[in-house]
Length: 104
Image 1: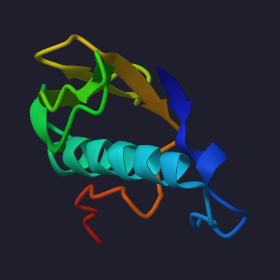
Image 2: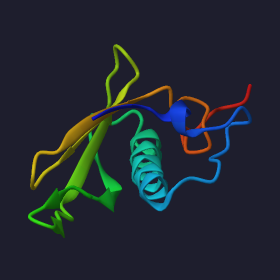
Image 3: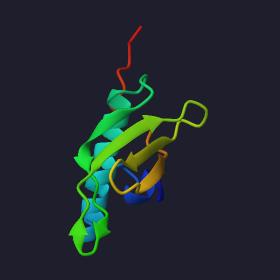
Image 4: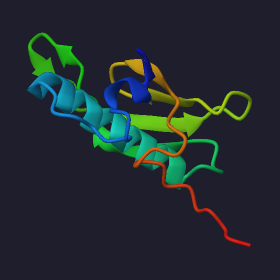
């Protein structure tokens, strides 16, 4: 799954009212962005969300590993149980960006 997270945001950078399925997807992606940006300088870290892929009608609930690609600044993620994976783009400066900015 390749996701431009800004496609879920309005012109003010907020999440507008969405159908329940889309809302759940945004929560999942937001958790990935938060986890990846809190560990921005690390090669990989574990997300604070579980996999949401359905396998035979049941949620996988596997652990999700996240990282930031240094060359593109895209966030990559993969479930360690079912291998569901994706990339999130255009996350910089969103409400879920948890990088530690130092003010000079």
